[in-house]
Image (cartoon, rainbow, N blue to C red):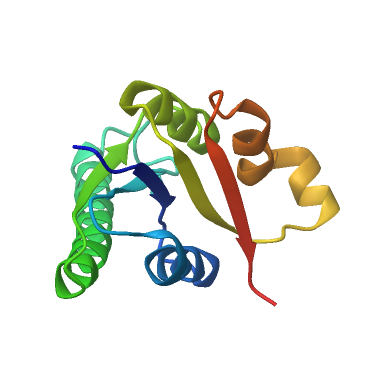
Length: 151
């Protein structure tokens, strides 16, 4: 393939949708391959049930979250298909989101990473770290990074 490899981080949020649409409207050109990357952070309320041996509920919650993520990815893939944009999905697990995005970008030889920024407050960003800040700081050489903010 002679086109570029463009990573678009997706999570279903408004900033993520903005980045996705901006990429298709302004950056994508024929021959490019869009990588729709989702860093799966399972939002499962384990509580004390796991320690009490109630693994069925935990397993059920993980399965439901996985189905939600697969549906989300499927919606983005369908949007690409409708616009005749070649796209593949990468569901990244086992790392923090920023680390996962960078690792996949290095592995695939990404030319560009596009993502939205949620604009977390100072305290939350200090405690959690900013995914977009991490990606900008650790992007591979010659890999452009574009961060889009919603108003």
